[in-house]
Structures are given as C-alpha cells and as structure tokens.
Image (cartoon, rainbow, N blue to C red):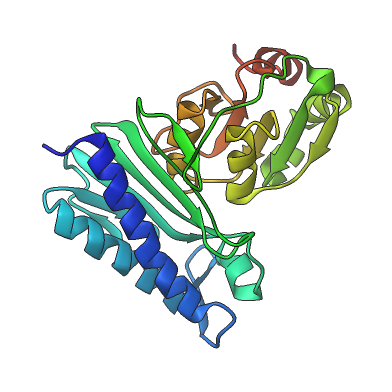
Length: 260
C-alpha cells in the first residue's frame, strides 16, 4: 500500500502534467462552451483533467475519480481522487491568472492529500499537503498566523452572492467593521494566503467540494480550521466555507451567529 507521501508525490506530478496543457492553451485561441449550469468549459479543462487522470490511474489503478469535467469513475472505491482541472475557468478564458488546478485524495470519506497549483499566477504558485505531514507553498513549509484579535485580523470574502441575499448579510457587515482589514481575494488565493499566515479569516459561499477539497487538507496541515458556515464538516455536499487561523475564529463565529 502506498503512503500518503507517495500519493502526494503523484498528485504533484499530475498537477504538473495539467500545467503543461494549461500553458499550451493560455492566451491562445480556443472555443468556449457553456455547461448546463451556464459555467464555461474549454478544451484546456477537458485535456487537463485527462492528463491528471492518466498520471494517477497509471500509479493507482484501483482508485476512483470524481472530476469536474469527466465525471465519476469507480467513485465507490476506498480511495477517490477529486479533481478540478481549472478552477476559475472564467478567469482562464479572459486571460488573467486567478485560476488553479485542484487535486485531492479522499480515503473512505476523509480528505488526506491536497495539491493546489496556480501555474500562471505570480510566476507559479503550488501549495501541497498530506495528512500528518504539514503543508508547503512552493516547497517551503507554511503555517497560519498567530493573530489572536479580530481588530488585528484580515478577512477575505469570496463568492458572497448567496450570503448577500440571506438574513446573515447584516452580521457579515458587523464582522467587516470588527476586523482590521477586509479584502476579496477569492478562488485559490485567499486559502494560500491563510495557510501561509498572511491573512486570518475567510468567509465564502457558492462553491462545491471540488473547489475546496485540496485546500481543506492544505489549510488543516498548516494549522488552520475550516468548516461549512453551518458548522458541518467539509464533505461532498459542501457549498460554503468558514475558515480561520484557529485563533480568531471563535470571535468571528459569534458575530456571524455560527455554531461554535
């Protein structure tokens, strides 16, 4: 049986294989189609996922897959790879670098490996983690911040359309007033920032497990906390996130009226 480090090493290889495809098409000419939910998809999305699956299936033929573009294959296996080949296709299509490849491994419902690769952002940025082994950013160990007061904390909001239409919106405004600084970094980037100790809180809605699975492993291994807004654990039905450095989370949850 392979170790989590071996799983992680092959996930990194798979992310690099997807990166080759992404670099080939980025800023090039390609057709854009709309999926059933009106989100865009390109040949780069599909070919990237095929490249990822090829690497992982060759290494672990008994594993299953749950992919954004190619769907599910042997998804009842003990080990299942969760793949979003280009998380942020809208950014990719419009030619700006806020997109990433997300690869996670789930073992019997538990997330154990995560790789988040943003090949065109800031010269390339890859975060990676395996359960019990810590987290890295571009190969260097990372850790969440030690900020322990909201009035010194930085909050990032993402995909807040659902929140803006809910009865929780006023409490989000209260949290914005309570923190030192707020921004909307979004997508992979604010999770990388949180795991690396550069921001301290994230509130996000309107996402799915393929967006967040790898980042969940990375953030936890960096010492942070992450759950759904209702307090439930991150899982296949996840649609929202509350994440923190573990020090300012309790105070922020109280303001938002979230479970402890």
